Image (cartoon, rainbow, N blue to C red; front, top):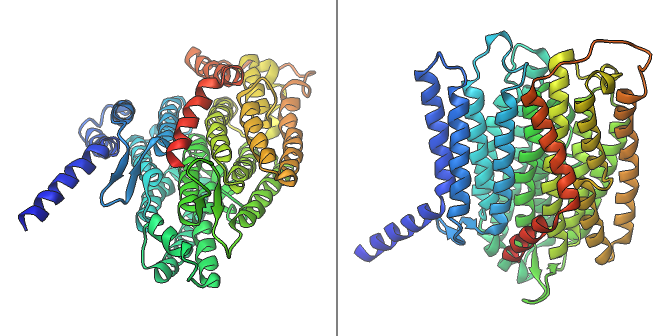
Length: 500
């Protein structure tokens, strides 16, 4: 009995030692709420608390670089999960910083303490998702993240479309959660376990019924697909992205998607596939269900629907919402081929996507601060009224398209190279054609900024130096990593090796 207790305490200490970044986030969440309650006169006290907590989390993320399993093997700590945590944390820091400049957040002397606290809570949920290897913990982590995101999406509650967005988000979220937990219950009934590796071992025996396994897998994919805005689980995305504060729209489009892809890659490769050998970095799905084909259909459907729907949009936030759906489709191509090169391409793409998408939404926020609108027609002549910001927007849009020498080009280059090397030529062709379609609606924004409205003489838009500097940093990063991307690829390669 004493030995059991000693072993339990020893294992607990070991697990807590590997759980330090998440612990810091929980402390940050609680302290931010307390500071906001005590120092009510200082509106941004919670923001600075959260920002400080994020920097401490970043330090612990790199300082505690041990690998292994924690809490009875429900959490995996390795470079793969650390990569997505870094993406989520960096996105959270950028969102907190640009939130200071958001006019809609600070309108009517609104209290923002809960807003920044919820960002910390949502970050904690996403950190959990990135490391989870147990289906129940994955579900709980998704719900932890979702509860914060529901509140954040409707934070400007006096705005009708914001309340509508939050309600739609909750309804769709509840449906997807219900579908996912039902799928988890089926797979537990089949395998007798929630652990991904144990499920993998059970499926490998070939003694399971194919039909219920397929149904449960699709149900779980539906729950995860909801988070990454994959078609046909994307219906919430345009309305929620349009109605939520611009900062939260940017946050959902990057951080939430990163967490979704982290768990999707881990779920598919650990539960339904096995490495061909210890030396060849290729996964093979178990006989019975062709999960590659299922994922390929989702990829094609997602990128095509996203791009075609974006063509008709007149609101820039809705346009970028459909654009983010299309980018989820591109990234799914890397998972379809189930090779280390495909996973590497997804991770490289995500790093680049973070830079270009946050930059685009940041420019939209700054222009909305001045014009009070996010309609495409209100971007007419912006190239002459705010030339620096319009120039940065062009960089972000070219990067989203995948035009060199931007970061987006590198992301798509690695993605298409991996797909072609795996002999999925038809999938690569569809991806390239979709990229051509995306250029059409991105060019519409550039046309409005620089070609239309040249005969009008309107007052120039004035922005603070801080606003312009942040825009230039994000645009410069897109160019910089489009030219010098080797360190990112090298880092990502080490992360993928840990997963294999």
